[in-house]
View 1: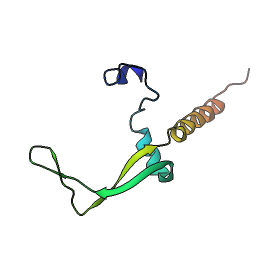
View 2: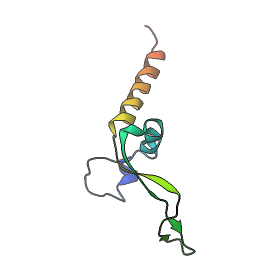
View 3: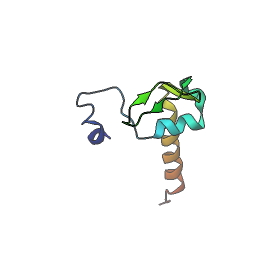
View 4: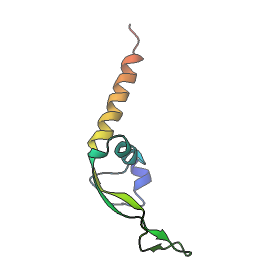
Length: 87
């Protein structure tokens, strides 16, 4: 993850995005994020954002990163227990 994020953040940062995991976690458990509604933007012919449409979207301001990480570690632990061989 460090290698992938370093071009964007060459200095030490508090967290690094593990891909789309935060978005998936919010789909599974939306109360784990700070969400707000706003009109969806429109896309101009040049690819720029134009003032919003009448269709609302939810924008995530913050996401609790502990939730997807705890889930990942629980799954790794369960997998390890299921595949441990007795001596």
